[in-house]
Image (tube, rainbow, N blue to C red):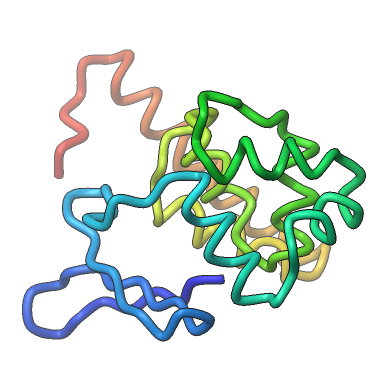
Length: 150
């Protein structure tokens, strides 16, 4: 799990991983460390004091699957497998999807998704109503040729 903080000086996005005790800088939407799905799964699994075999058993896959994921040998785990890994290792699911190339990595969207999980049903409905109104206005402006850059 990463904690996100904006630095006061230059608005650089900083990700902090408490398991590893490390900070990672983010530049223009891309993490500057060379994070791969395999390296994240490996590091988080070790931080959780699990063997590959233990993790595999917990998520109901073979230990060779975990080994292949961690070695970045070209395997692209399916979303349910990534969700199971995410749940066990307490790593953001959307981050794993992004590392797996299944979604674009946008930390702002990940933060909104994490926050939305904690909303009450009424608060979630209000948030969706607000977002839908904003998107409707945005798409209406784009269709009419209005400037949306302000």
